[in-house]
Length: 121
Length: 113
Image 1: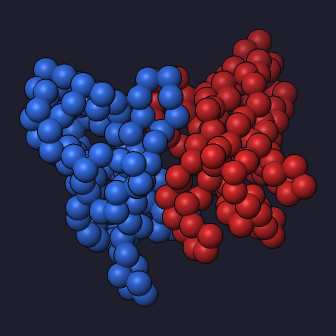
Image 2 (image 1 turned 90 degrees about the vertical axis):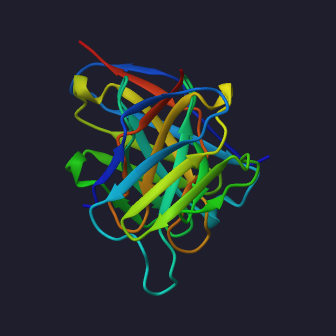
Image 3 (image 1 turned 180 degrees about the vertical axis):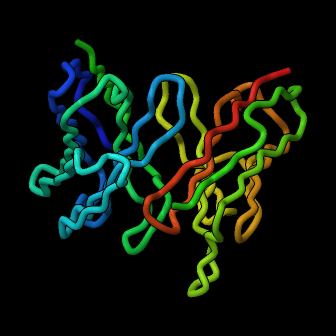
């Protein structure tokens, strides 16, 4: 079945970077964009970025001021999100989510299980 | 950025009752080119990722019970649960995918009265 599986929880110190992976299966990885969304404890959903897994095009939320990098390895059907210069307020669950449509914008039909990132000194 | 505003923040509903959650966007999310509203609804239960319920404002995702329905156009949208079941206790989010940055509403928590 179609699914995306994320890497495990991370604990980082302020100023460090974290890289989260999202491995897709059950569909043609390069045909769909992959998005990254985060959720701070007890809070709502915040969109971060997306990558067109086919051609590598990316788009980012300005909220992260260049701290976020997204990439994709089509040979491994895996997307990556790296967040740098971590701050305690970056403590959150980070989700990857697959776009529902091959062409153009769409909703997120498949979500990863989430990766908890804790930033603490 | 398009701001998505949901109301109410939370509500308590008796089992079997009908309930409606509202979502308002600061700009229209209706495309002139295809006459589609770029609006989705998600359900999130504790400890789980969000689950897509409705997209294109009113299209139910495969496998979603038909007690869930979406309506609205332009800037005003609603998610209705026709007969609340115990398993519907969750937080519900609307999202626009009309323009970047994609944005979510603040969420509506639905509980059993």
